[in-house]
Length: 605
Image (cartoon, rainbow, N blue to C red; front, side, top):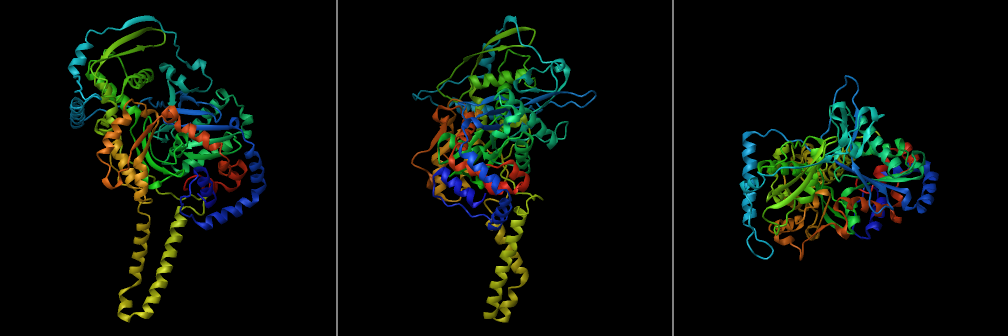
């Protein structure tokens, strides 16, 4: 991010906080390249001042859902972020599951999971309700006995219909993917997995294939949901909400997708955690995004996500859903035919989890859970079942991550990776690193030469060239310590991830500010009582010297749906006058390329 962009962000956040300077040569080189398209920029500034919110399209892609809409919309359109294409004759079959699949547990892991749940039950039994009275717990046997006599009530024939190949010209988009006929063998793709592009070795897993899927899905939504003809997109601008931990190569391709393939007249990128602070109206906060397949944490101040504080953990709402099903099975769940890998059953389990799971200790004993199983062409089945502490144990997995061994995979924390070289960017991180190294070495050599003229020959001999070279490397490594060196990978619980993120803030004062304001966003933040539970966990662990007067945990600011806070924040920011210079035009992108992101991106490139 250049000094110009830094100025814009200061204006946006209305803060006088100092921001580190970036490499001057990069900005000067880019400014010279931009001179050739100055007429285009002037034209854009005139148009930008007249932009209306109806001409701004906000796109927030997620691992499970896509949120897209005009900046003038109260709420975005939310659809399943998936596409299904008919399998080619004799071609390979690939189906991304709706829920993260479970794995076969080893004997040791199964014992670990069961012991963890037993320990969690003991914790719930020792808790008190808000009136100070003991909280009665429920056992697995008690729930299973209550459900033993449960039989479903048969209803009328379902009017749902499966989508067949004969009805599809090329693809199925969104929620209709759940109803793709299994006998027709559609290839099902989710372009995003675990908060990043879903690159894999199977069919449709190459970068070009994933980008083609995104073009199709986003283009379909723009034409059919927003009712904007593709030929008119040159008069519209797009804001793309990206993850706080990003891959530079992927961002470059996504900008090309928006400007070149879809044909928008301008775009800019915005990190989801920064967008969330705009949506909540906060100048500084520790942002926690609980998504379907990942949980991310970072500290945001003055519209900048502090790189050293970013952590991404590969568990989320999908893992909680699978854990919930595991607990229901052990408690005699009467819907024995439930198969989480089936799209409709996966969606059903997600609805039950979102409707009934909570962390409110005042809700205790057996509770009624009602749901309907509906399959196309067969009678509906209505179930009335009893569920106990399983409703709390499932979301408590966020604080006891050992239970997520059910879904396998490596869920350890990941930080922002070091930048890799880009042949289109001559002033990339590798160039800056090497030039900085040479500058340090030359400075040290000059200091050593001056010292040698004043010291004795013996002392000069003891300060040889090899020592200088080692000193240069160590000095550079020390300077990069918080930001550039990779973080130690550990499996953090939610509270541990927050503590670790804030601990990596650059100053004690910033740590106090972050502990005083924690913002929970994302679909996984909707569990009633989550903020209270997290607050109590953090109070026991915040270092004494950093304890603020009050720790506020914000969920659903301004009565917004937590899953839409980032989208709303991006809509707000895109309309600000001080954000107009962030836009990237197609002509600029074609001429200058990825170097524009170093100049215009509202985050450190």
